[in-house]
Amino acid sequence: MNKENFKHECSQQLTGYFQLLHKNKLDTGLKHRVQGFINAGEFLQVITRAEAIQLMDDAHLSVFGVTNEQRKVRKAAISALKKAVKNGNEDSIFEIPAIKRLVSR
Image (cartoon, rainbow, N blue to C red; front, side, top):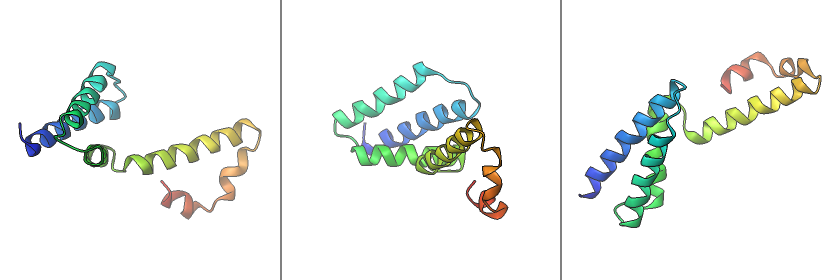
């Protein structure tokens, strides 16, 4: 198997997994198979870790419309807001101008 074929197969597997995840259908077996496939490619030196991360980000972007890093930042902001609401500061969301809330989505 050459490098381009391997990368194409990785991309297909990642996209399939992320599409299921996007539909809220968690398939841990598929997740482990995809991880194992990527790890095998790294072990056999078909791809590097940086290339694997790039493939994951590309697949994530194609399915969710944001990169994995952007999604982590957004989830952290949502968690912080939930924590503020839990602590009794329900109006903290309104301290941020609406235009900034829309842009940060």
